[in-house]
Every structure is written in C-alpha cells, then in structure tokens.
Image 1 (cartoon, rainbow, N blue to C red):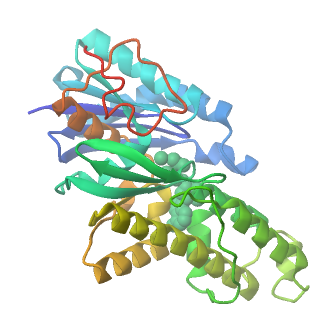
Image 2 (image 1 turned 120 degrees about the horizontal axis):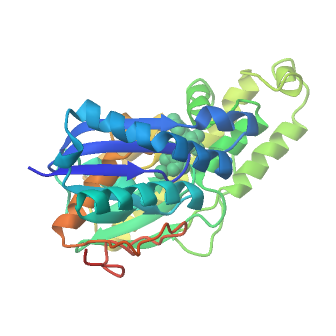
Length: 354
Ligand code: KG4
Ligand code: ZN
C-alpha cells in the first residue's frame, strides 16, 4: 500500500497530509497565518511566506504523528508547485525536494487549482469528464476535464469571487475574511432588495466581479442615514436590515452568474458532471443553487466536504497520487511557479522523469 505525503503552501496556509492509497486520509494538518493578516484586511505575502517557513517542519512532523507512520513509510511526495504566492510556494517546493532527495522517493509538483477539484474524488469515483468550477480567494475559473486533460474554459478578468466577498465585507465593515460573514448575514436578508447589472466580459466563460463591488460601494455611500445604517458609518460595524439585504442581493447575483456559466459550459461541451472546488464552495447559497440546477437537468454534482473546501494538503496528495499512476514525475529542476497554468502538469507539458 502506497503512502503519499502532500504539502501545500500556496498562500497563507501551511499544510501536510498523509494519504493511504487513493482514498484514505490518515492525517490532514493545517496551520493558518490568517490571524496575522487580519489587521491588514488581506493576505500580506511576506508575512505568509515567513509563516510557511516557521511552520512547515512542525506541520510535517505532526502529520506523520497523526497518521501513525514513520517517515521511511512514505513512498511519494506531492507538493503545490503553483499558482500562488512565490515566497510561500518556494517553502513547500524546497521542503518537498529535500524530502524526496534524502529519502529517495519520487516527487510530483501539482497545480493547486486542479487539486481543489481532485479533493472531490477522495472516496468517490472520478468521472471521465466533467466541468470544474473553482471559486476561491485567488481564483474563479471554469475548467473542462476530458481524456485525463484539464483545459481552462474561462476565468475572472479582474477580482476573484472570494476577493469580491472580502472587499464587499470590508466596505460593510464586517471584518476579514468576509465570505463566511456575508454568507451568514445573507441568509437573513432580502435578495431582491437590490439589483445589479450583469457584467459583460470578453469570453463567454469569463467572470468579472469588480463592477459589483463598486456598485455595492456606491449603494453604501449614497444610502440615506437611517437608524439601521448609522452603525455602519460610525464604528464600521452593523448588522442592520440594509446590510443584510445588501449581502443577500450581492450573494444572489454573484452565485447566479457562477451557476449559469457552469450550466452553460456543461450544455455546450455536452458534459453531465459538475465538480466544484475552492474556499467559496463552502457557501450555502452556491451549494443550494448548484444542487437545484444540476438536479433539474439530471446532472451529477460533486461538492467537496466542508473540511476540504479551503486549502489543504490532502487534495495535493490525492492529485499527486493520481498523476503518479499516470506516469507523471517531477525532477529537481522543478521550481515554484506563481502563475502555473491549468493543464501544464497534467497534460504532460512538464513531464519529467525522476
Ligand atoms: O480557497 P481559499 O481557502 O483560499 C484561496 O486559495 O484563495 O478561499 C478563501 C476565500 C476567502 O475569500 C473567503 O472569504 C472565502 O473563501 N469564503 C467564502 C465562504 N467561506 C470562505 N465565501 C463565501 N461564502 C463562504 N461561506
Ligand atoms: Zn486554494
């Protein structure tokens, strides 16, 4: 039985996981530096990479301990090679290379975005083709998977969806990260209270979220000073009706766009499987709408378990294992690639032999 060690350091998380075979997660340890970024209202790359460097060895030891195995049991090292923050990825890639070299085991660098999709297949049969939608703080992408190849169909032309959530939350004084808070408030608001113009992008499968963020800012700036709004202007916090309705309307608009584009991609490509991944796939409204719209059309939907929505190393281990079985290997020339493209690793462009 093969043990794969997964290493993930693409942004503010430092994570290691041990996967047994293709489906059994023995450990999934995550150390987040989120609390260090909170005062800045967003991730500060220098702080993130410094945290990765400080945490990586401890997180690795802990993952082995929780898995109950000795280092020499590991047969394969899988690591995020990109995309993400160069300083953070560099830490994981260097650590993985050192382990691979010292233990004389194969090394595989994987694409973080593809791994978010692969998280869905731990313990569930992977379909031969699917439309993947990745919604996170750094990415919003539509991907087609067919014949073991990932192809990018479209992506955001400006802000990522999670970024839009975080910026809207900042405008509303709700703190960082804003996604979970907006999701919670939206459930108590009226989604029809405000309407937003649909963005027009160059590509049919592309997204744009900066326009709606500006629209929210305008609504807040021009809102009459009602008692429900005043806390917003004062201490920068407020859960009044205005805020709840704005959260609900914003959420409904962006999620409708995401779901519509996903369904359109399925119809155009003649594919009946939808796979969702990334931090924003924890969103309750997205989960509801995706379930509803795929069910109506008789499509199969894959939603990741909540603990695998955010950045983790189990998904990295799983994708590394899958690629290993397909004959993909990386060598020590592999470097951190902050703008690694979808399909570069899986499609063999960078197929190295160990
Ligand atoms: O995938 P992730 O952990 O990190 C990146 O790779 O970017 O995603 C983090 C993003 C943040 O922007 C956060 O606000 C958002 O996911 N998020 C949510 C929810 N939970 C987290 N957005 C909307 N609704 C949620 N429930
Ligand atoms: Zn991610």
